[in-house]
Image (cartoon, rainbow, N blue to C red):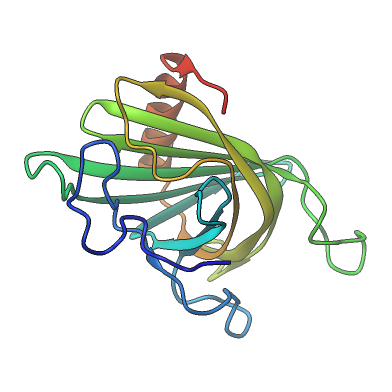
Length: 207
């Protein structure tokens, strides 16, 4: 398995394949202690002709919502300047929605289980690429319900939609990572609403 930059060194950046700020990863992800200090996502891309690549991205913003049943909406977002087009920004958003929550000591838990839907949206200007899939998410709250930490495991992604001519940073892939999020209801709801509206305007793709 190769570990490389999303945009190979020495190759000029292009509109279709910008680096997106994803960097090479040198070690396997893990949680240091009980609570990760950063939100870091690892992508293992299986579509590269030279074999699987391991890529990672740290997210600056991480928000969460828990409903009355204990199901999670986790929203991760990073916005950075485009290397290919200086006047544009690239926005990466990940939405993780759980539909049942493992309870330590009560629920039989294995990382190969599935309990969440994962949506990864990459926007470059008006062009957008969407990946969707399923995975396993485990989490716990801290600071009297004001912060949350956990990890994503066994996630699978595939391209499902796009708008315009978006970047194709990876194809079918595995996703995992650790996160630390805060509760900001207004900010989280605003991002969630944006993503829902965006998904309604996608042109379906299948790779």
